[in-house]
Length: 253
Image 1 (cartoon, one colour):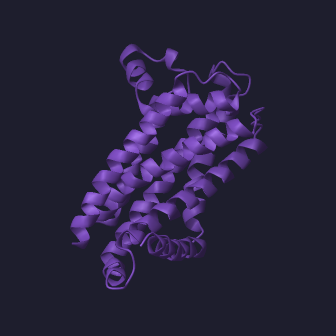
Image 2 (cartoon, rainbow, N blue to C red):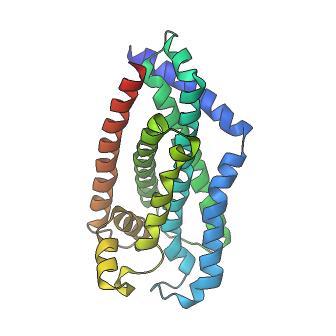
Image 3 (cartoon, one colour):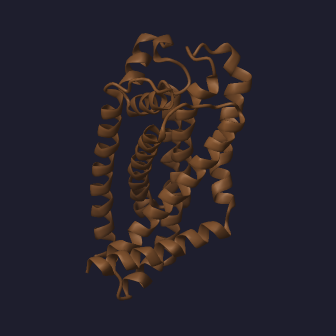
């Protein structure tokens, strides 16, 4: 049964990835906004922002990576909604394949597509002057955090993808997630914010995740940031997964 699930998931994931390669505008659209934002903040606003670091792009990149992922998972909800409405799910369910493999194919496709987008943004950041003396272990830790963050947001995307009434509704949930880094340490230190805003910024998940990634890139002690970041990612992942699977079972029952 396990081999059956993995085999079916691999086949369906290849199908979803082929759809993306046939419409590269999906990945291009996903990376254009964060890259444009990075260019704007570094070359227009960067000189006026005191980040406490010599290079503002080094300070900014972790937050831009999270925005890249938040932008990308909107397409996961959208693609899932289209498959639900087109009847593809029903056709797959009539075939001798593992039921959950259809859903997992969308999740893995989201993971691959978003990681490609992240790599593209990092390459652009390197052209803009981003530099890191981090070793392999630190880069792997960053990749692990971003992977967990992507999976957590992807399972959130599955919920509206399965339950939305319109294509816009399936992807609109991503807008608050894209906005969340703006009220965090992603663009400016939280110490510069007024009291209530600072309190929110310092106690929401993006700040811990951004701080952990930034400290890994700059070879600074990560302290408790990495554990808080992992706790947020795993906690959101577990809750979103439970809700998504519950909705999925009702849909296919």
